[in-house]
Length: 214
Image (cartoon, rainbow, N blue to C red; front, side, top):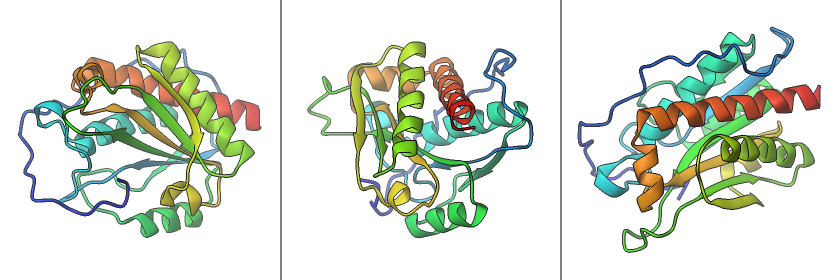
């Protein structure tokens, strides 16, 4: 629930952010300094987002992945803005307003999914856009890049009315990296090495979009 409010949850204290750098030299090349991308890590602060198997929190997973995506893009000469870069809360309207103020070439919101803990068999990657051919293209390139990089059930690229992709003026995509409540996805998302692969795949998808969009 992307409009969910804060809960009384306290972090379990055993989440391990990714530390090992990944060499971005093999990533697609774009003109340095020409493009701006907004990366939007979902939730944050007292709002942990979804909470999954083993107490894995959405806010921790997506911030770790988002920081790495930003790092990869910056190393390729892309100007990157982040709606949050630490464990802080930013409501949905300010996220959209920030992006519209920055006027990026694309906006990418990164989240992790959840369903009932009684449904651990539900796993998979979903990527969303809203009424935009360019948004659909951006989402498809990110989605396909992730599926080529990591094991994940393909739940498709879909149109949706999530606030941050509906109210941003630029081509926008919202990526649900997997289900924190799914047995397979939760184990992967808890693994720093897997999150490094996800970040690399998302960066590749964004760079491929910039190359296609010109």
